[in-house]
Length: 131
Image (cartoon, rainbow, N blue to C red; front, top):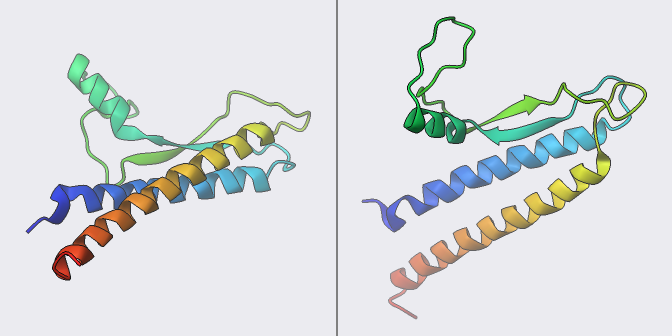
């Protein structure tokens, strides 16, 4: 029996993503003065793959090419931004951007927790007979 139609599992995966994003942002902030450190971000892998799979057909001609249509265990991955350098020491962490992303991610995480608590409150209400 699948209570809530898979909502709990979706919320769980979303919480995993928010936790990973928080850890990545914290690592970036901690390394703001580390020479040659490159900032990292957490991105959804399947969003791009799904969009590409639905709009075009792809053929891998080399093993180093990005695989299309293959599902991974987690719907997100950590990517490193090697394209920029904001500081004279080769570091590219923008602390203002990271703090903004951290605040946004904390709001997102709290909204997920509130929604999950609501689902469990509903279940508790049903178990108690609506009281």
